[in-house]
Structure formats: C-alpha cells, structure tokens
Image (cartoon, rainbow, N blue to C red):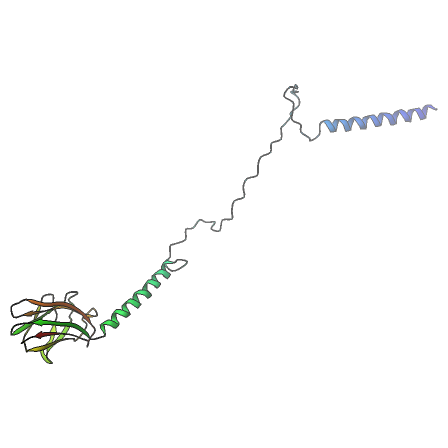
Length: 215
C-alpha cells in the first residue's frame, strides 16, 4: 500500500467521524424538549423549557347584533299583543252586536195589579244624562210628548180604568250615548210603588206594561 493510498484512507475516516459527531450533536441539542428528572442535576448552562399544553379558548357565538342596539318595543311588529287585542275587539264587537239586537226589539215588562182612582208614571235617566227623550202613551193616548230624561224622576198622572191599563214608552232618540236608557216606576194614588224597572232602547223601539184594576 502506497503512502498516497494510506493518506486518502485516513482522510476518508476523519471525514466520516466528523459527520457522525455532527449528527450526534444535533440529536442532543435539537428542538425536542425533554422533561428533566427531579432527581437528576440540572446544568446551569443548559436551559430546559417544559412544554405547556393549554386548552383552546371557547368559540364565541356569532353576534347577530354587533353594535348591541336594543330593539325597540313594538305593539305591531313581532308581538302577540296586537293579535290578542284584535281578537278581544272581535269578541266585544260580537257581544255588542247581540246587545244591540236586543235593543231593537219591543219589550214587554209585565202585568201588575193596582187599586185606586189614578196612577203616576215617573222616569229618569239612570246612566249618563245625555239627552234621551221619550213619548209616554196610556191606553193609546199620548200623555207626555218628547219628554227629556234627566237625573231625577219626573212624570205624569193618569186615570185608572177598570181592567187593563196599557202604558207605553217609545224612545224618540238615543242621546249622545246609545242606547236610550231609563229607569221608570209606577205608583198608585197613595204613592206606593207598584213596579220599578229599567229599559235600554234604540230610537223608535217601545217598552210597555199593563197595570190591571179589578172592580
């Protein structure tokens, strides 16, 4: 073996050793971080940082109102109050319609016995005094024409006949507030109340009763 060949063999060996040492150094001082043993000494010249694993923060829900503007309260939009109010109004309309239908019919208020020679019929507006007016007939005769009802009783006297005495009240108008409302009473000639009742009438509708005098 010549000296030149021996020189190349030694040079190759040195190169191999250097490369292996560099690889070993990289494996020791690489990026892999090891947790040190509590019982093993720590080299002051070597800084070992323990890897910390923290949970990811929760994903916040998407804010559909990024400016946090409070939606104004509405009685119309996206609210059931209007629907409930409309439904209630419909019920009241049905109720009022039934009541108004009853006011459109003539009303018979009963038959009552009476004694004496005459009787009195007195009427007043027991609700809103709003200009209600009436006619009063006794046995087909107009005894009070276009009487305006007020808050106190006022009325007329009429002679009694043997048998039936028909008293009729006809609503001339309904005043400011429909219907025509009144409280009336019939008294004998001693001032005793024979009957006291109320009516609610539309204009042109009649309420009637009979006072009956025996022989």
